[in-house]
Image 1 (cartoon, helix red, strand yellow):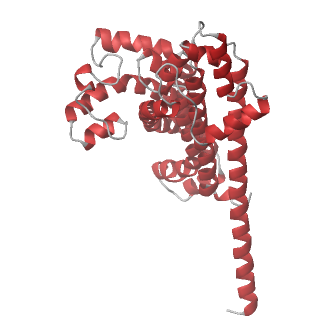
Image 2 (image 1 turned 135 degrees about the vertical axis):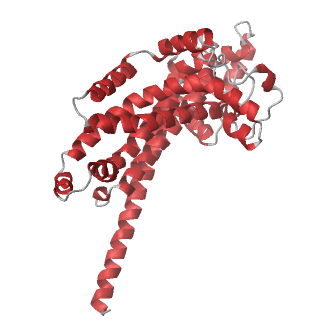
Length: 355
């Protein structure tokens, strides 16, 4: 290789390294800016709501001197800019204060309840993707047919019907009438004191420990709420899959593939779906994030001990440390999933590597 070729190769390598570093820099700036925005919003909400955090801790009958001393200890007598600085510093270190309801550090409570929400949302997303993607593909391939109309109706109902109504209807039908599922909870009472979770994901923990009776009991409790969340995910994923596939099936490479005599099955599942799978990564990731943050009503209806029910109970008891801490935790995960999906999209789609 000549000196000129070496210089050209070195220049390309340097340009590629600069592009990668620039992309990483933009990613970090967006992540930090978004997270600071989340902290600013939660801080503002915590200061404008008509709930005195001092009285929430001490009660309405606390002496005035004790109230003032506690206010100073909590830093609520400082200017807002100083309070926000302390708030951000504590949040970055994982200190969201102490829960009035449980008397535990809020982060300790979040670590305890968040695995239940993650397990529920993960199972729901898997159900939605496994059914939603094939349904969207078939709806696009057979556009205007009966299966296309069914897919549209399924999506319309998923977008229109309130989740809490579906949950109550599901309990009446599958629990009260048919008795196919267990009562609203995460485990039967008989296993609450005999089963020791490891990761907090009961299905995984029970399987790892070989306690299959616990596994099937946990499955009977989670299958209905996960199916409802999966239905919401299915409605979104199937609709977007149909849209992406219609776009791919109208491309010139599909016409060329048919002209070459390739089978319709290979064209649809091997070519069109492969290209549509790139944006589907973002769709599934966003669906997962939406289930994580939108499972509050589902957890309330099914008494599911996740972060949604934790925030609801804390809000009803004016436990604002827990409410804001849980909101920040969910928001942080939502931001992380969004940024990760955007990064994966850029890595998987060669058309975005030059941008």
